[in-house]
Length: 417
Ligand code: EPZ
Image (cartoon, rainbow, N blue to C red):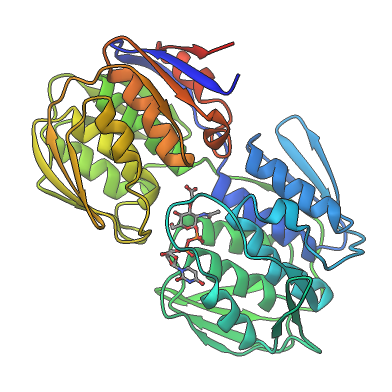
């Protein structure tokens, strides 16, 4: 059954192991298309977006096999440059296969990617940047056809630090003829992870300044083995769970350095945060105090992916907060469901004005996208009575098993059969 049931009121206690990062694994899986051999990706999260990416890779001739927590990706042979629309439209990150397919086949036919409905999600920056490397795009009956007689290095100035556009350019440039200079790159840790993976496979990518990359094209990449880092957004989600429901939680493998802004905000609100090499400990005893302002920003600012979980924390915190979402123009939709549970969130455009604390009451709610769905589960942890979160499939796109993880922290949570 596609429904998660939570009985609220129990603080979270204990330790949870943080899974591998979805947003690091997906671009690295795309990068494997550039390797004419086998890549072993360890700690690859077992989530539906990874399954979807596996399907897309298999449709172009790549062999993929899961072995415990690792994926074995064999791109010795790539026999098609047509990406399967059926899978592409299920997730946004299918678009970063464009750069990889162009790097391998000099050709790609793609469709406008799908993914979470969290606002406009154009790909103009991807297209403009790839054109700078010699790619010609045209809209055809089949889809968006990209081709390049030869990929030649060039100079690219990204107008906005788009994560996906940065990844696409890197993937197209590593095998291009000559050198590529990119400025205005995204600074998210997933970009560094992609560069580390590619350099480990023989690419030549250097950081030449804040948001600036210099890529020297090479002839070919080699087989390698890479361990995917832990998921900073999953860690942040469970941290928010402890801030909202109260308790004492250790997030094993969470990397404090990737969550600086979030940890600072939590400390400012009154939580006790202890960072260690092996993870992050969060303790919330008494009532937290809401900060006056929170703005989501590109990294290293407050991550847009933790905005919805933060709305739940604010509903349990003393005072008012003006939260501004600056990255996606449709990412405050979950407020309506949270208000049905008793939160007080007034949304005006990309601003959400919250007032707390509020006693939430369990009811039936519907996930509409990945992080909003996770936020509804966190709200269930704080609510009086039972909450049923429908459309769990959205949450499973990015969380291996949110029920397993929160149950390991003592939550009264299960799946409605
Ligand atoms: C990545 O999405 C992540 N997804 C998102 O995580 C994350 O929220 C986002 O980066 C920002 O950090 C993956 O890595 C798979 P962007 P992406 O390109 O690459 C605009 C999650 O919950 N834009 O940095 O799509 C765009 O509309 C997901 O795990 C253009 O205008 O994000 C948005 O307003 C959700 N034109 C802004 O830039 C373009 O060509 C940021 O988008 C590209 C983007």
